[in-house]
Length: 435
Image (cartoon, rainbow, N blue to C red; front, side, top):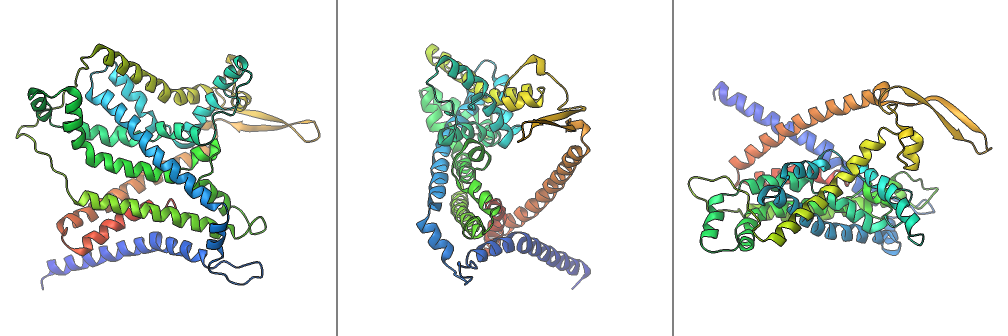
């Protein structure tokens, strides 16, 4: 055995051992610890009761959180796919005036998401928001808390979760061979039939992946249900994880059980996705691929309606972004009261500092000097941003290296069982946010 083969065996063994260490230590063991914590609960007498949490789950209201999350996930896949496909077709397939500006607006969810995006909507639609306050003045009998609960969460997340469509579906539709579209049109197919019979079948694999990703996102929703008042699984997990046994019965074990339920749903969905993708999808194209050309909407009425729909979506997408930018130049009192006022215009959120005055329980005002500091004047905030940036770069680099190496090995050994095991190992991190 020569030196080259020995070094190859050494590096291969070292790589497998390193991968196994990180996978078992940072992925598998946390999940096992979570699972065992469910069956290590003790009753009021201090005796171990392995099935106490499960009995509590079946008899209590914990099932409501699971059903609410499932309801949100199912309807979110429908609404997000409708809006996501719409924005991609309007900017990449149909000839819509101002498509570049529309695309920039539709892709703002890549920048503003989570708590920031929901906060942007609350500035306008909350009980004391700008729009709601104006409507309540005009219609005194109107419910000021209309933007809360399931409908508000579904509305917010419908537009917040189309970022994957803006990335992946956009690339997929740009990869369509225009010769196939032109051939269908030459054979007498109408524009809608071309879209339905030629374009959509090509996008089917991407759409299936996006549907699974959207379902998992709805199932694991956190910021929107928490801020808008909807009882779903993840906010309840966070609440239980921070509770003590003095407040309620075995809260950590109940949080772990909800996490396991989320993980089971995720495993099922990812298994279906993996099995679907292994079938393979093939599209017959010409030898010389032609770039997709935008299609004009020949019907005048349909053309006007498409433009109106495009810009209505643009306004909906831009509202939270505009609100966040405007309120970033308002002082603390204006942000708290959700009132825009030129008299409260300030740069203290970015530079300098400001005293904070508050009313005590005794009815007197107290002042905390310099407690409100700007983003670029606070060393702790800047340090946190720097650390987040550095860790993000390191995590992205390591993830790319690991995925490229493992995927390369999977493709070279696609007919071996080890490749399928590695494939499911790559899907394992999807479980960690729920655990």
